[in-house]
Image (tube, rainbow, N blue to C red; front, side, top):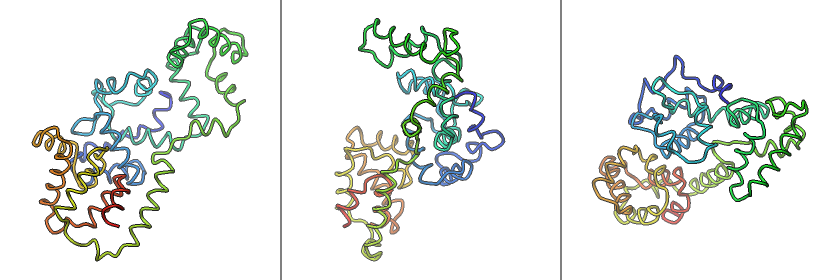
Length: 300
């Protein structure tokens, strides 16, 4: 995958992070334009990038990148992603990597997968045993050894005792294309969510604009807080204009009670927006924040 890094780096000469930051209103739109992505795609990627633990300027530091997971394959994947001068991963690079995975040809993706197995080097029986032992932790050493032998023997048509990149690609090509394509398919926004959003848009259009173009009530805010506090509400907060730093400040202010955190966030939004804090805006934020069911319960 490292060999294909130049295909999705896209930072040289056009560092979005030097022109804006997560606290600015153009953070999402600037990345959408620079990476040729739709705004909903960038919003979803930003939500995930925040979950990985990026810092206040939108960079996943080198130390944080290694602490994200104990999964060796994910760690190896992150090692292949281009870094900035300090060893961090910028949000722009993250977006470009996601775009590459969504549009790259199957063979390019396969070559990227091979790079993850042994950092691009040929895979022998010992390397294969290490990989299989991570995949099948409950299997005995004898079983792992047998599987590694079968893997190398079947693919190593050159009888060199190891599997190189071209052999790996040719072996995968013997499998049904539909199966391989399905395994490697990557959508920034899963198709099922795209369908749900389309249905939600249709549902919203059925309501009269006048019905929701009214200021939100305290009762409505409490209803929303009670329904979303037990779920992942960060994206919903983002839709109302809150950054991760804002949410951290709210948490410090009201304590660990998540319901109170959500309610304080909503009160802050209401105070900040004044008369513009309408049911329409709240309904849209809920739907775009993956709380379509909550929006339907409260507003329809």
